[in-house]
Length: 256
Image 1 (tube, rainbow, N blue to C red):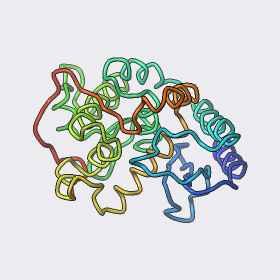
Image 2 (image 1 turned 30 degrees about the horizontal axis):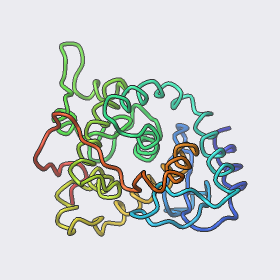
Image 3 (image 1 turned 90 degrees about the vertical axis):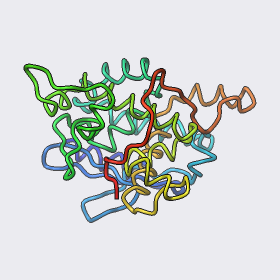
Image 4 (image 1 turned 120 degrees about the vertical axis):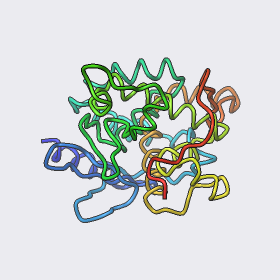
């Protein structure tokens, strides 16, 4: 049923400009997103207007297209039981870390498809696909009753830790969202070695485009419009500071 819904949403949305997003639902019911058709399993989820990740992240879509496109995408997530169960953890993590709720939602959708038991080939765990060492760095530890891996499969633990890490990266890269996302995927050192740019890895470039495309569709319309009405008071780049955040560099997650 989810696969059929995904196909219907994709067909309904096909017909705009660029910034496409592709998706497929696997046998376990987990949705996988990508900014391009990675293989024949992927079908078009929505087609959106072209935008520059550095200059136009928060820009409104063309009149008449934004409400329909965003409603389709948000309605799809509202159908997912896994998202509904994770929603309270996202809200709390967003409030405590300062990371936008819609951004956390987009990252989790891209990282794990809201599969709490997700494990990457490199050992990243849970909703926000945290490597164990990253999780420990941001406050997660095993308990007498649960291992570190079991802790990371718990959304109440995984999401706050991932939000703290993402907030740290946003602060580290001066609020430049595209670089923070690239570092979340490829490692902080990879972004630095690339000259403070998105590293030239296809996986990382696709990841950044995918998260930004979802984030743009998941943002509420009212705050974006209000910010623009104030003469651009809201920057298209996000600046956040993690109080008492960790410092230094860390390149474990998918470092290449």
